[in-house]
Structures are given as C-alpha cells and as structure tokens.
Amino acid sequence: MSFLKKYIGDRAFYRVVLGVAVPMMIQNGITNLVNLLDNVMVGSISTEAMSGVSIVNQFIFVFNLLVFGAVSAAGIFTAQYHGSGDVEGVRYTFRFKFIINALVGVLSVLVFALLSEPMIRMFLHSGSVEGDLELTLAYGQNYLLVMLAGLIPYTIAQAYASTMRETGETVVPMVASAAAVFTNFVLNCILIFGLFGLPALGVTGAAIATVVSRGVELGILLWWGYTHKQRCPYLEGALHSLYLPPVLFGRITVKGLPLMLNEFFWAAAMTFRNQCYSTRGLDVVAAQNISTTIVNLFSVVYLALGASIAIVVGNELGAGKLEKARDSARKMMAFSIFCACLMALLLVVTSVLFPRFYNVGQEVRSLATFMILVSAVLLPFGAYAHAAYFTLRSGGRVAVTLLFDSVYMWVLVAPLVLVLSRFTDMNIHWLFIAGQSVEIVKCIFGFVLLGKINWARRLVGEQNAKM
View: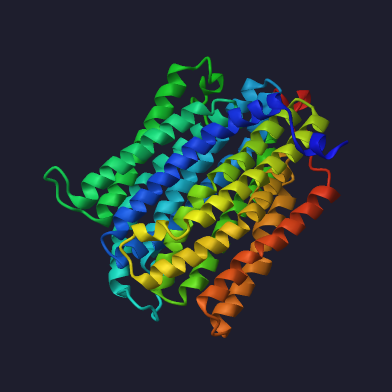
C-alpha cells in the first residue's frame, strides 16, 4: 500500500469524517471563543478576580471530565449498537448515562460545597509581582457557590447530547451548545458590568450567566429530542423505568468504569500539574489561565477529529467492518496531525496578540506569551496522543487507555513536576517546558500500543441484542 493510500482518504471519506467532526468543531469553537471573551471580561475586573475564577474552573474541569468519562463508558456501546441497528441497546445505554450522570452531579455538588476553601487555597502561593491571595480566595468561593446550581443540569444535558452525537445527530447538540454560549456571553456582558440599570455583579454575574446557559442547553436538547422521536427512537419510554439488563449493566461497568476513572484521574493529574506550577506565584495562575484559554481555542480542530474517531470507527466496528475501521482510524489520525500543525503555526503567529486583551501586568503577559509558544510547538504531539486514545477506546480497550492516559500522567508527569516544583528552585519557564514536553513520550507510548495490540474489536452483536 502506497503512503498516500495508507494515510490519505478520498473525498467520500472526508465527507463522512467532516460530517461528524465539523459540528463538534463549530460547537467547541464557539464555546472556546466565548470562554476567551468571558476571560477577558472577568480579567478586566482584576488579576485576583480572573485568578479566582481560573482556580475554580480547574475543579470544574475535573468534574466535566468525570461526566465525559461517564457518558463515554456507555458511549462505546451506544456507537456500536447504533451501527448494528439495535434501538433497544441504544435505549439502555442512554438510561445508564442518565442514572450515572445524575449521581455524579449530586455527589459533585456536595464535595464542592463542603471543601471549597481548602481546594482553592491549594493554588494560592506568595511570590508574585502582583495579587492579593485572600481576595482571590473570596472571588473563587463566590463564583463556585453560584456555579453549583448548574452542575446537575449540565450532567443531564450531556447524557442527551452524547447519545445524539453517537447516533448521528451531531447538529442538534451543536445548536444547543451554541445557544447556551450565546446566552452565556450576553448575560456576562449584562451581569458582570451591570448594563441596562442592573447592578454590576462581577464574578458572581459570570457564574449566574453560566448557570442560566446550562438550563438553556438542556431545554433545547429536551425539546428537540422529545418532539423528533422518529430521529431519536431510543427516547421512547427510556425514562419510564430505571431497569437495566444485568448482563449489559455488567458489561458497561466492566468496560466503562476504568474509562470513567481514567477521565477523572487524568483530569485530576492535569489539575495537580497546574497546582505545582502555581507554587511559583499568583502571576503563574493568571498567565496559565490566559494561555490555556487561547490554546484551547486553537485545539478544537484536532480535539473534534479525535472524538469523531470514537463515532466513525465505533460505528464501523459495530457493523463488523474491522478492516475498514482500522483504515479509517489510521487516516483520521493523519488528518488530525496535519490540521494540528496548521493550527500550531497560526497560534505562533498570534501568540503575542492575545495576552494584550487582558487587564494584567506586563509580567503576566510575557509569561502567558511564553506558555502559548511552548503549547503551540507541542500541539501536533497532543493531536497524535488524543487520536491514539480514541482509537484504542473505540474497540473497548479501556484497560489499555487507562494505562495510556491517567496511569501515564500519575506515574511520569505528576512525580516529575512535583519534584521539580517542591525540591528545586527551577523557574517557571523551565518548569513549564519540563511539565508539558512529556507529551512527546506519550506519543511514543501510543505508537507502540497501537502497533502491538489488536484494538479493532466488535463488542456488540446478535447474541446480546435482546438482553
């Protein structure tokens, strides 16, 4: 097989891939663009306000990834059931998502409500040029208290949105998300700054806007899903009962629990790494908040392409097309890396521009620009690792993905940044390079795993279609 045929598909192939990925790109792109604008608005209040919100969002990030892991656990089966035409199987996987997500939402509210102060204080360290630590804590606690109201609506919305995407309805979740971020942006403008005669609520207003937007997203998904049941037949009677076939429940749990734990521990490791960076002062928290927000905006293309592997390849595996699934995964990975290289170049060109939008000191701006440049160089490596993760996951290799993702983070990355941040006086520039560049090692690990194990497996079939 020639190089071109092995790694580059025809027009029909890219139509299918982009048909799945583009709605997710638009959805995530809008979300991250509005996050950038929100960031700038909150940053206009003060460095402390932006840092307090940024710290809380570290923990919301862990929560979001836990929810993602919960829906992904059943999503492996959803994509394959849909590929095999089994509506009843899709219905059961949706029910599983709904129950688990509701439980995750309730438990998360309790944890955040009881432990908000000690969690935020972990990121507050002296040594910065600017910033009041106690004021940052106050901003963070006020923001988190309001955000709690939006956690459960978010978890329920993800159960619906993920199932729609896995069954081919990618446009509706995109529209719901776009409406939510538009609502969030408009309310941010009004509530943060006190427009139209309303009081200026600052970070509390930003939190209220986010909570309302969660309700808007859930409302749209519910309205469309239950008024278009011919497009979502699995919703018919899905919540009339909480019954799950024991065999299917056991299979999703065995395959899905490691995946759910992986997302949680990976997100926790990322937060731990950022906490280690924060030991170099509040300036670092502010700079990393700026750089992460901007880099996330430029990462939407490869993130959507990676996530679409789970859907496209999962559907092909469910239909028993194992060789086609392998070919599709290989070409989608190559396409993802190519797109990431283009985004990296664009990010380098604009790296100095974005930090200027923030009302922060020159020290924070310079550090943010440096972090953006480092992240841009590593963007193609992140694309490969992300695509490798979803390729392994599409065939149900959850134990391997656990090893590849969260175990890797806690065994290699976390100890490295812990030692360098606590036991050396290494400055933040070299510490950041060391902590981020281990992504290259992960790519090597992923390449070996994809070549050594048989990841392309069919998990559903006639024998379990009527459990």
